[in-house]
Amino acid sequence: MTDEEWLKLVREGEDAGWKLVWERVVEPEAGSSRSVGLMRRYSITAGDLMGMLYEDMIGRGKINLFRGEGSLEGWLRRYVRGYILNANPNQHGEISIEGAHPDNEGEQEALVLPTEDKEILRGETWRFTHWIFRKLWNTDPVRCYVHVLKTRYFLSSEEIRDFLEISSTSNVDQIYSRSIKFMRETWVKHV
Amino acid sequence: MKTPKDKKISFLFVSLPVKDLSNRWTARVTFPPASTDSTVIQVEVLDGEEKIIDKALLELFGLKLKVQNGLASLTCAQFIEGLRAERIWLHREGRESVPGGLTFG
Image 1 (cartoon, each protein chain N blue to C red):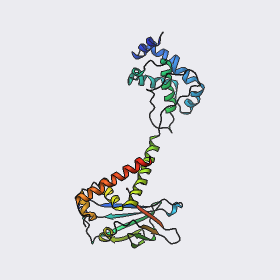
Image 2 (image 1 turned 60 degrees about the vertical axis):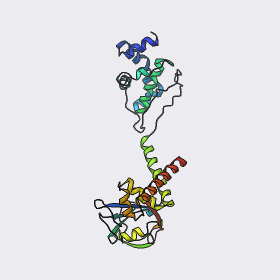
Image 3 (image 1 turned 30 degrees about the vertical axis):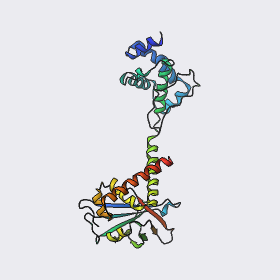
Image 4 (image 1 turned 90 degrees about the horizontal axis):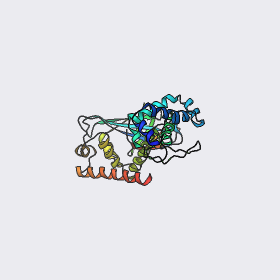
């Protein structure tokens, strides 16, 4: 059976096609030396992998992303490896391999999947924002007060003028836009 | 000065990063709704573990405010007058004095 024929069977959800997916992709990958230990650690079975693959390929239509670069077997195997790695409860983030290069056959293949821990990223962004705000404070404390009153309490420029005894609403607006500009420029400069 | 009639507004000041974490502090200045120049505002001073700091001196905008049982006070007019000052320090007996600044929160 050629890859094109197999692809057609898989795309149409045919038993014959998916039997081959099990035999050529899921079972061998689940039994490979690099996956066995991880699957045991993360409590994931070959049946789970098969389910995830079917969900992605047929449920989400990802089978249509196969471009024919490399073998269908290798392309599907990348997904299965990704499911195993993504089963790590300490690793958050999405794995996408739509842009994968043509496969290298064999166990020695070095597969790098794009992953990021969103929790860490969020924490780092928050810390960095605080750091920038402190720089703003050192530059001009009034900009910080205006910034807080605008973004945290949603006060109007009139209310801020009356609160902080700033000369005019346009002056309030100017201070606010300068605070935003400073923070944006500092972010760009240091990232 | 006057604050909005329908909102309570707080400014949170925190200590700058320090090696000894036990010297961290926060000071929250709260303006009740419809505050005016003569309104007395409370400053709540806590340590890094969010426990009240019993006794200290809060240097806020050139004013030296006594902190007792975690609280200090000043008028709105005094706060606004010192608005442009960066200098905010907490002095505690037997401890390093630590400066701070405004933050979100």
